[in-house]
Amino acid sequence: MKTGFKIVICGGGSTYTPGIVKNLLDEKELRIRELWLYDIDGERQDKVARIVKEVVRTFAPELSVFVSTDAKEALTGANFIMAQMRVGKLEMRVKDEQIALRHGCIGQETCGVGGMAYGLRTIAPMIELIDLCAKYADSKHWIVNYSNPAAIVAKATTLLRPEARILNICDMPVEIEARMAEILNVKLEDLEVDYFGLNHYGWFTKVRALGEDVTEKLKEHVAQYGYISKASYEDALVKDPDWLHTFKNSSVIMKMFPDYLPNTYWQYYLLGDDIVEYSDINNTRGMQVIGGREKRVMEAARRLEMGESIDLQQFFVGVHGKFIVEVVKALAYDTRSRQLVIVPNNGAIENLPDDAMVEIPAYLTSRGPEPVRVGKIPRFYKGLIEQQDACEGLIVEGAIEQSYQKILEAFTMNRTVPSANVAKKILDEMIEANKGYWPELK
Ligand code: G6P
Ligand code: MN
Image 1: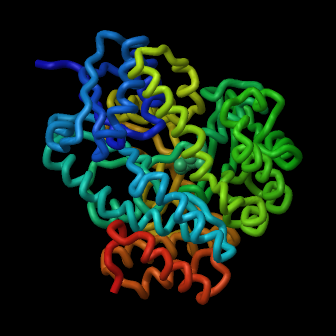
Image 2: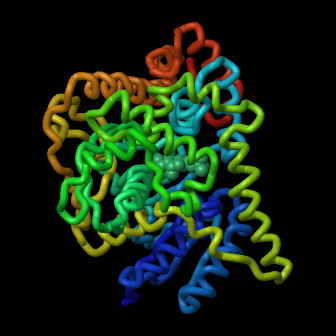
């Protein structure tokens, strides 16, 4: 019998793949038999695969890497499928951003109208992937999904495929925790947090470092400096000017709403005017990623093809790969690691609907997540979450029913859109821009 796991990275052509593979290889306890990259864009994936093969050659030369555009071949017998698809690629991210900004709204990958547009592109391909995994993968497979927009994807997959072996996750909280660790001068592993909300829409209610409650200490720091410390300035993520602005913005939110430590994504919902003012329609975040991270990856692939050497280190930034691998390891070996994941509420937050997809701590077992109980939350937070949950629910229902009306309701309801007039104008433009990607709305 073959031992070890077959791991498939779905969306193998992503710029994140080399970094994630490095994290997989670092985890010596995780016995990998075969590593597969799977993507529907073979040309792009082949380029990224060159870097991946270089990473494997350097850090685990004994491991076999396979690259495929064929779902059956890639998924057959797979134990873990790491899903990171970006439907419409970065080009569509830029369109989402620019259409929103043209109408004075925040133009963002996962929040506001951009996030809803991206959701409408991603629901059907994610369901297709789940079905392919059910058909070809090992019967005990797990899909670890971090395809965005995770909130809408989680809501749709749970509603449409409730039995699917999928766990939806996002690395933002853990990226924030890494900054918290820097601020406190402790190791990330030494932190334990309490947290509640929706994806890209939540708060840390308590932070413990080696058992000591450090919440108030952190709040004071964040109110003054945001999620930035002296040590953070050495951090590759924080060196990115946009992320620096984002981590600093948490200070404004912390001062106004001192109950809990905010997720950085609150800037889009609470400081929309600042964000629109800060944004440049001719240099959106998507454009920056195309001209930055993506260009670096493609350039490195080209150099490898020419037989030149490259610096692999540049692909190993942030803690997101480490977190994803930690989740895979927990599902594989029943480690009961405590992580923030996106799960059906089912009473965990007492005064929210059962079918809200909430981001809360859970102990990860080989049978899936065992979420903790959060209890009742105050009215301000409850109101914000209910509005956003209704909005995301309308996107999912609208996609299933192909209902223009429901999507218009969702756009109108979103906090980042000032009026139904603006919602309708943006929606009509987005329908045109997303031809071939969105379900046809009637
Ligand atoms: C964080 C979020 C992801 C998001 C990413 C965007 O990691 O959790 O959901 O995709 O940031 O980063 P970028 O550098 O592409 O703007
Ligand atoms: Mn995320």
